[in-house]
Image (cartoon, rainbow, N blue to C red):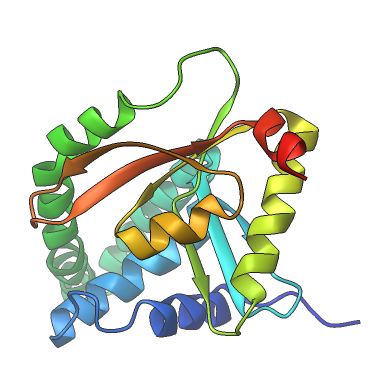
Length: 203
């Protein structure tokens, strides 16, 4: 029986899958790595049996609160024992996360417009944040499994495709295309969604 992959191993999958995406310098790589570990810890996720593909869904707010509390406690304990190290940890945290916070703030109006696209209704929406894979076919198997889970639980899956190729890829799993919104970095994000009955009807 194989053991479940660690957060560090999953972070390596994310890094290899998204290598080179706006992370040319060391600070960018540190920021991406830190954000990836936090997301893996705080977000709901599905992992391929091989451990070489991971899908991040929406955040679990209890986990987010736990991560924030842990960071505050760690900084407080470190600062009490070794004040200089505590300040260094605080400065490093600011340097790593401040650029991420800045980008998120600039993208907020565009993300609000994206959220307004798509079908209305009271069905539970589950946002597919990202799919990363380092093994051919593992990402597709993971998406097929997620689609089956969504059928069973009645989820409306929602995601934002970053280019035409990804839009075509996700359409294989029953996702329909909505409108596109231009992001602050100049890229277009296409809102896509998948109704449970659409998947059943296409099989």
